[in-house]
Image (cartoon, rainbow over all chains, first blue to last red; front, side, top):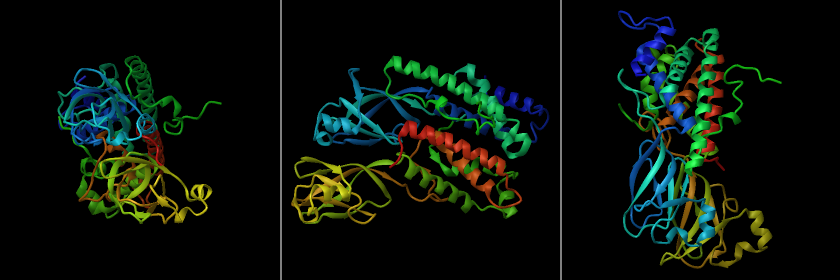
Length: 229
Length: 215
């Protein structure tokens, strides 16, 4: 579905036909903002957008921030060197166990440690600039035009309709807003389902990051459901 | 299609006014209910909360020059916690520093405060809350290298860009809305604010899962 088609569905389900002047109570810009927020949340919950880029790691440097060079970076999936060999993930404690002078050891990178929003440490640090291939979970590009197509799988585009309706009705509060909570629950259920698929896929691929276990979060209070006893 | 970074101003300028029940930004200002400074303050509260409860704002710091004979050093500005520390000596020799509490130092060495030698431990509570102490008291100059959790600069209208993935912009809009809608006023919508607090709990769990918990 295109963004325009999703917006039209949202308007239609809110009983606002896209006639002369367009939707009135729920402006098109709000619906678009809801679709974008929904897509971003879906990507964060599922890590479904797999991207790849070359990253030139500077010489004689151990620690790097990736967001300035990979603006849509969320989490690393796999880092490989120019020959295609995997630079294996490690924790800082493992690097200390491996080499008591790891922060200053010079050579071809064979391990990396990722921590925080975008901090990455390379072991060993390169003596000269080195190009590494980074596969990462990325954030989606903002949808702007009616012709733009969401980056999440097409079978989940309908969930953006659900999320956008839930979001635009927040402004009303009360029973009107409460009536949209099942839509949020549906959206989160779909994200959980797809995150399970991505997780299984990432295990198979030997990727280094897994999506959040949404099933471990009690969302009964979030979506207005009583917990079953 | 655009790809902005994580910037609180993107959220404020986009549609926060609509979600608060106003027809545009001018309407929000005219209502004299909520100022933009308050909205940015809510965002700053969110940043401070994330900085102390998660490892999002992790960075490498090598700003402290260790001088022979001086065991205590002021921590970097906005330092929250040290996750790892080591000394780098001239010639790039490295010595890992084990993080130790004052109690552990006393257990290790009853007169630890007077010992001199090559430091092997770093304590964040042997001195005051904004300094660290090396044990033993160093006998050679070096650089103290640390991986630290650090709070970013205060968020306001003039400084609103954050070193975070843009997918987290909605965290700040959710926090601002939850705060504004909880504010004592005729415009309060406590049921929506309460729901948004639950949304934040979900986001907190996701953030800790993906990027690590805090101290």
